Image 1 (cartoon, rainbow, N blue to C red):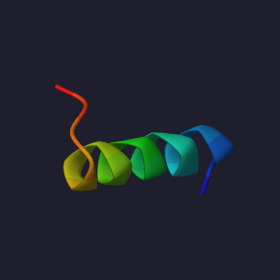
Image 2: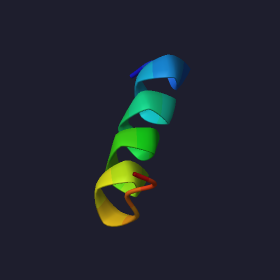
Image 3: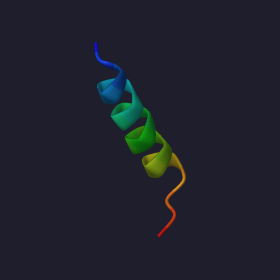
Length: 21
């Protein structure tokens, strides 16, 4: 696993949990 992938996944999960739209 790459650091970028982890960061991207974390951001996606956070966005889904807390939408800033």
